[in-house]
Image 1: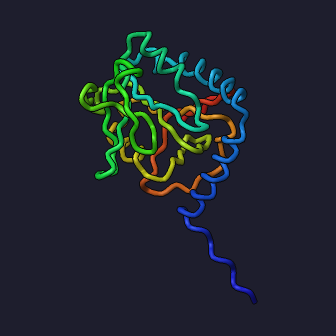
Image 2: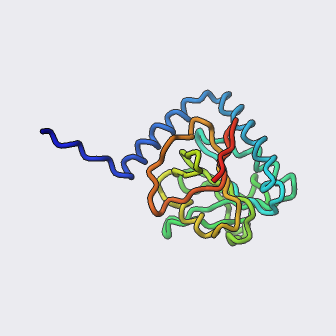
Length: 200
């Protein structure tokens, strides 16, 4: 009798899901991605948690991610404080900084993503953030999250201690039936797609 094949580990399963979802996201035509991003942004701007937030932690999108540009422009126009993350590779952590001008306050950082310049962007503590836009590769309808594999946002989310609204923006193709969650993986409160909202 043939022995059963060994089951894939959570790490291997995550790697396969990342590869599959990023490939599907990359395959979206740029015009379609812009349209879906605009629809998601409209939903985000209507959220009571966003409308009432004084300080928003966002991120600057790269590659085929949901385009955060319109959201960042809106919150600055509304007079909200914008915080952006900066990668600390030595400690594998994210530091948060207040950014007043995305044209002059940023410089190329890790992986080519623009990050706050520390000499002009003061650091801000997680407990000063009201609304967090959380990036990710894939999500479930239960708001479980799969990131890019570094664990940076899983560690950061724990620092908020449930005080801030944790919201992810994703294309519907990024919603998957199941994710191999481990003890260190952190869920979000809400996932917003172009045509649905999923709450934890």
